Length: 229
Image (cartoon, rainbow, N blue to C red; front, side, top):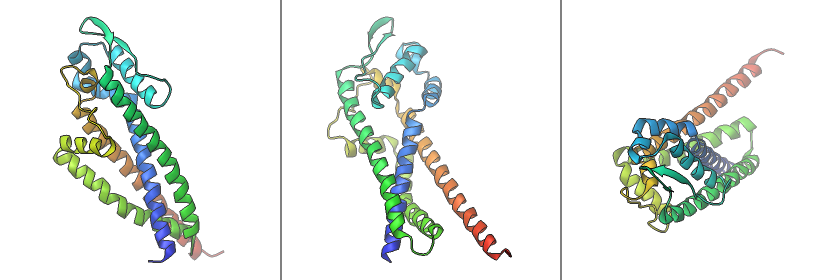
């Protein structure tokens, strides 16, 4: 494979990884998604708190991850008692989650920038040819990962979710007792399963739109070349 093709392939992979991370961010910070999931699972009723307090506790976590606040201290009335929503173990786990999220967003910026640089150096014939190569090779490489994750999640989501945490965390703080933890009762396995599927769908649609744009751009240019001046 020519050096230019290798650069284009790497550019495509990095760009699509950046798109995947963007899809994760969009889906993970959608308030409407959490509202829908909480209503579907009747989480407020099961936990013993109001819908308003449940969303306040959720917003606290989302704002913390976005670095809009310094802690996840949040009070709510739970089972008739005013108390802190999150305990020490949950707080320590969220420190790890925030670090992971912030690093992922930094990586996304690096991936975007690196893909553009590699694409520029990979241009040989035309920009459209380079973009097509980047898209095709990048999609082939990343599709393997996405399909594997989707199949794993569909077959045994619990095992998939545990392996995900063991890959990115060096402790077991994510293992929470549902008899004690409010957080684990807010963010159930069903919620995370729906979130993973939502991310894959958004990513797939984004990739399909990019592919369609390249296809129609190529057709337009070919038509323009055949048309008389």
